[in-house]
Length: 206
Image 1 (cartoon, rainbow, N blue to C red):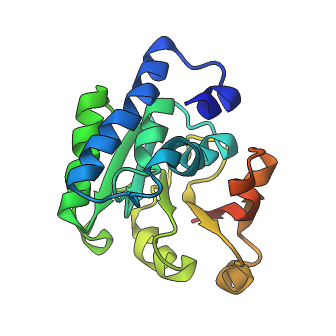
Image 2 (image 1 turned 45 degrees about the horizontal axis):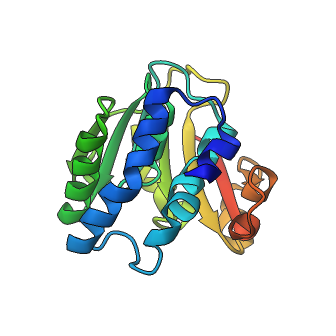
């Protein structure tokens, strides 16, 4: 939890409580339904919560923004972002029902009221959103094809509507088709910990 407060010192009391509750909730649920590697649960705040909040360093979503998290798994990056941006609406989607169940229960027990959930494939989602976010779900070109139908035209934020992905490693081949449009930010520019040295955010306006 300290690594969250280190980079986001202006959290409200409510936000601090919500972030603090995540470790016990995920530990409990993870013992029943494995959504985070059991070896990795001790690193929940650094590897999952703070990693998700890298998106909050790239963009401050404005009030009323609609964001969809594709392939959310147990709720990342959607749940940390929903805590960070209580006036933004998040829709978390995953094709694996038991993972969505965990995310929904964590959100309920955290008292989040700005999150909805769907056990669904992205191809079947028809609604429009300002941004689609994801954490290493699939290659960028495949994701772009599936989600571009879901991006709303009207712009509310400083960045044009589009796709924001958390990824790691070598991405040159993956971004090649979008070379002139894509923006890459190194998470090591925002967070000092060793874990973030190879982690990146890819932003693709759509």
